[in-house]
Image (tube, rainbow, N blue to C red; front, side, top):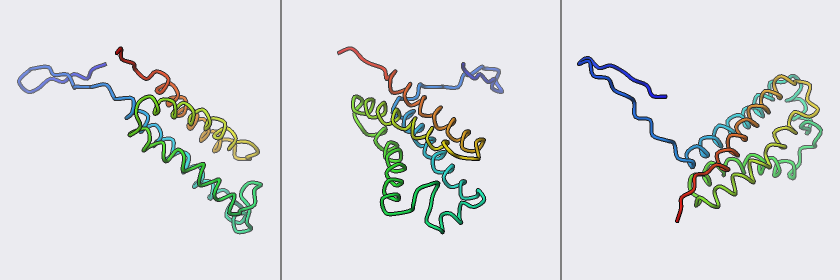
Length: 148
């Protein structure tokens, strides 16, 4: 759908709306995913008792250890790197990597809801993350092809 405007001279113009390249769509989608992924974790700190548990060395049911922190860093670091990789990798590798990583993060996002008492908060976060991941999967799957 085009947006049209009328100028003071009475001429009608249409806004130029070029298609967005797949790379840009994927890069933006991973950035959006990261905002939700990080903010769900950050806003979790406002849940009563969360900070006390962290000070006691526990997150959810996991003891805070170097292993826990390394796994957490990997879980956040991979989608963060996908922002860069979606912008710079060649099309074939880009498409495959996006399909694999987004597929792996759907269950990760769903797992974050398991066992939580704040269903609305975590459920909303997981649903939004999964919708963005579905968009990534659809965009990567439908990557336009050219004939050689």
